Length: 431
Image 1 (tube, rainbow, N blue to C red):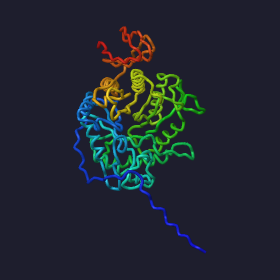
Image 2 (tube, rainbow, N blue to C red):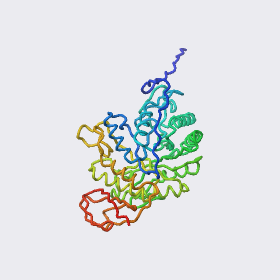
Image 3 (cartoon, one colour):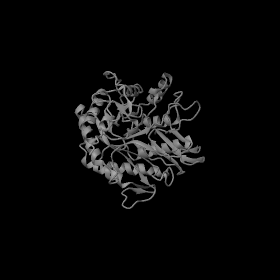
Image 4 (tube, rainbow, N blue to C red):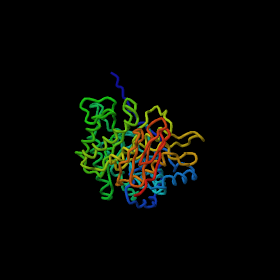
C-alpha cells in the first residue's frame, strides 16, 4: 500500500501590495463655514476630483464649489481614496487627507461615507488591496474592527460631524432568500453607530443607505406605487427592519433612480420623478420623522444619449421634487473625469476637468443651495403651461421647461418664453 501525502495549498496573496507609510499626523483643517440654514444640497466626490488635478484646475473648481457653501461627501475607501488600513493597526490616510483638505478649502460642510472595508476584514490578504473586491462586505468577525476604524476616522477629522454607514448595502445580499441580509447589516451598523457616538455624541449617524429600485409594472402587494410603476417591496422591508432594530439614528438615508429596473424612464423621464417624492414621504412616516437623506439619485437611462440641456432639465426637476417633499439632504453623484480630452464634453460634470471652468450643473446646485436651503418657505407659483415646472420662495424662483420645444407661458404674472429644456432663474418682486 502506498501512502500519498498532499501538501496544503499555500495561501496565494491577492491584490496589489500596499506601501504602508509611517504614522501620519492628522491634517489641520479649516472649520466649516457657519450657515444660517442647512444647505440641503451637495455633492459626492468620486474617483477623479479637483484634488487630483493641476493647481490651476483645483483652484478654479474650489471657487466653483465654495461660491455658495454646500455639502461635500467622501468615502473612506474607493472613489478617490485608497485603502485606509492595509494591515491591522497600520493606517494610510494620505488620499483621504488630501480629499478632506480640499473639501475644507472649498468651504464644504463635510460628510463622510463609511465604505468600504480593508481586504483583511473581508477574507483578503493583509497588506494588499484587491480592488475587484471593493464591494465585498466585512466578515462578521471583523465588524468590531471596522467600527474601530470608523472611530479612528472620526477622531482624525473632528470637523466632520455627519457620517453615512456603508453604501447601497454592498455585500449584504442573501442569495439563498433572494433578499437583503438586512440583519447582518443592522448588526454592523449598530456597532459603527456605537463607536462613533463614543467619539463624540454630537456626531450625526445615518443608514441604511439602501438602493431602492422600481419596476414599470405594479407588482402584487406593492406598498408604494404610482404612474411611475411600483417600488421593490424587498427594499422597503429591509428599510423597515433597520428602522425597528437600529440602536439609534440621526437621519435615514437611501439612494435610487427614477429609471426602472427595465432600464427605462416610465412613462416618461419627468413623470418618473414622482417616485422620489412618494418614497421620501414614506421614509419620514415610517421612521417616526427622521430627516430624509438621498445619498445618490439618478434620472438618466443607461443609453446616455441625452443632450446636456435635457439632462440638466430633468435633474433640476428632480431637485424640485426633493424640495417639495421635504428632503433634508440631497447629494449629487459627481461624474467628473480625469480629462475630457480638450473640447470633449464631460456629461453632468460640475467643472471642466481640463480647465476648471464652471459647467451648468454647478450653477443649478449653487442656486438651490442659496435659494432653497432646508427650512425655506416655499410659495405656490403656477405656470399657465403645465409643461413648465416652477419652484418658488419669497425672493426667487426657478423654472424648467420639460418639453423638447419652445414654450410661451405666464409665470408669476410675467410672460416668459423658454427654449427647449431651458432652466431659468428669476427674481421675484418683493411686496
